Length: 382
Image (cartoon, rainbow, N blue to C red; front, side, top):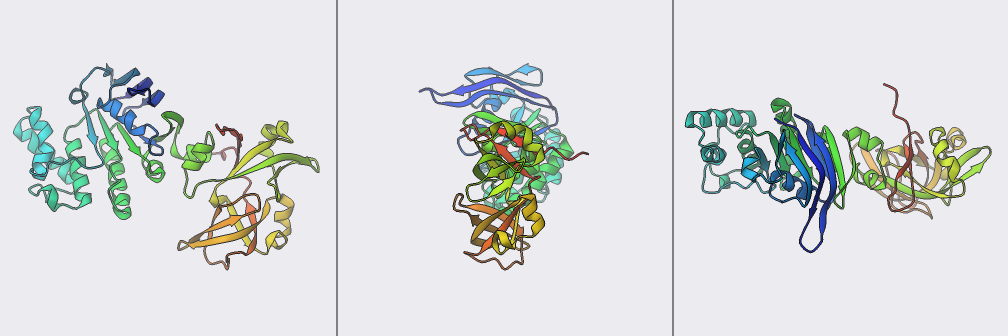
């Protein structure tokens, strides 16, 4: 295996459309890195540049110690797994897995040994004589994985390999890919638009927008300390709620004025927000940080009101999810607020509730387009 290093990589197409801008990343030997972002953000283009399927317009790409900008894809010692499996329909599973090794003139006994090992790892050793049309989607994906494994490449590249599978099978294959990575200790770069896949698979995730890296870090760090509003909204299910409000000072403390109510600014955010008294900021709160009870603000307990963590909100929709429920709330100033609460309550549409905010789990951002993070709660001591 090997490190993969991208420095100032750019991809601009004829006509001036730029898909990747000044991309810098160092993937360690044996690391699993996930590129994640919405469609059109440049993640697949970046992966194809690494593979050599796209020619870079600027910057350098190293695989191991080798500069590969001008190296043909077949000579880069990488293995790529595609969304559509790309299996030859007229060949058996064995023949599909063996093809790349035959082209490299690997001896037959070594080919057989490599395929046997990969097939046993993936649980497809009983179907080596079958053709792709007789296989399920999950089996085809395992064959595509096996074809990559037998090559023993320096780096594995995955381009949305689970997009064609149903939800249950996607979960199973995610676990399979993670287990394979732990067993093989392979350098892996994985592309997905599914942030749940990114969070569960990656040692690090790279969040992209418009060809630019927005944030790179460990999944939990990115989730807990998003660099800007885009990352905060994209990473996490359901997405983070945003409230535009004004910073005010009253009773010797700072408040976030939402428009129809106010919340106390936590002590950890005081230094960042004190210079912004009278100015607007954006407060972000994940659905899991909002809870509630019936009765509006007056129905909330006295301690909660004293802490300044309650907004009166109207229930719009309740979506049961088994042991949880998503409750869609609104105030006159803010619509489509989602709270993920424990199931079993008696909430109903048009009911007023005292929505309580866990102020140790909120974030504050700039109001401009960049939406840069202003303040977030410090990480708990280890």
